View 1 (cartoon, one colour):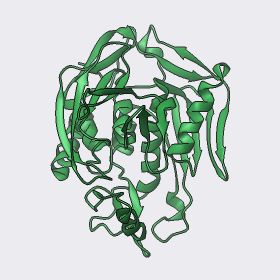
View 2 (tube, rainbow, N blue to C red; view 1 turned 135 degrees about the vertical axis):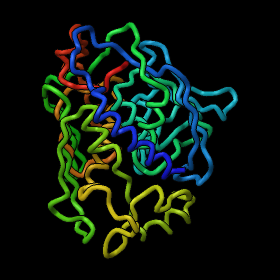
View 3 (spheres, rainbow, N blue to C red; view 1 turned 30 degrees about the vertical axis):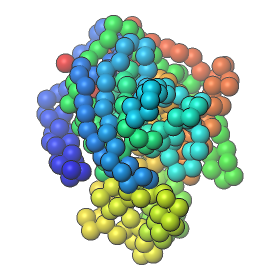
Amino acid sequence: MQKRYLFVFYQWLNVLTYSGNLDEDRSSMLKQRTLKRVVKASGIGLHSGQKVLINFVPHVADGGIVFRRIDLNPPTDMPADAMLIQDAVMCSKLVQENAKVGTIEHVMSAIAGLGIDNLIIEVSASEVPIMDGSAGPFIYLLMQGELVEQDSPKKFVRIIKPIEALIDDKRAIFHPHEGFQLNFTIDFDHPAFAKEYQSATIDFSTETFVYEVSGARTFGFMKDLDYLKSNNLALGASLDNAIGVDETGVVNEEGLRFADEFVRHKILDAVGDLYLLGHQIIAKFDGYKSGHALNNQLLRNVKSDPSSYEIVTFDDAKSCPIQYVNVT
């Protein structure tokens, strides 16, 4: 199933390349977007190892991104809100009262990449399915629902002064910037992590996200896997949905999709984590050894300082510094 998703996903990339779907003549207000129709799929939960149903449901303008636990009675809605994130050690997990849903960062990254503002994500368990460990399958599924514009202006959070979050030697910083640039550095002293491939920068757009980021898979060390499984974690982890690293290098037979796939995946995570602010961010993001918890702390620091940002819209879409795939 994972390989089929990936195959069709890359077919869609070719269509995007040659059909000119990226906005070129944008002269009207930049509008919010959702899906035209419901899309249903399923996959394996990374930690539970169980089958998880996932449905993408169109949502009303200004409704935002909402996760819905359809296995609970009654079904429980949780807005994709940075202030609801708890236990962000291994993934970003929304918690509201007795309901939770984890491993949301990859699907949030795909939603951000396509510029979707309003969507309900129904899941039948306490975690989003891991798919192939990247955002690629989610991009494919969302495109099956077709993007549609809504008659409300698309909102952005523009950072207007530097703001940071620090934990030990790890840091995450926003700087004012015309666009959304992500600079990320990891620091692993290990044969699998070549020093020249531990830093990466992207200027965010649908095109750069899809081609340069969305296919980068999550990774983990084989020595940690037995410990995690003994604690009922990572029960669904396999080389079909993650890059495995042992003492000498990458275990996966096919190797890496990109020479710097590890740091690209950290950028993928950051795109998803940062979209929990509620709108696309206009800023430069610098991350050094940052993870879900520090990314979330940065958003909390932004929210606690109203002078650090402003909400903006664009009456003329051409003036928006971020380009998204066109809505036809």
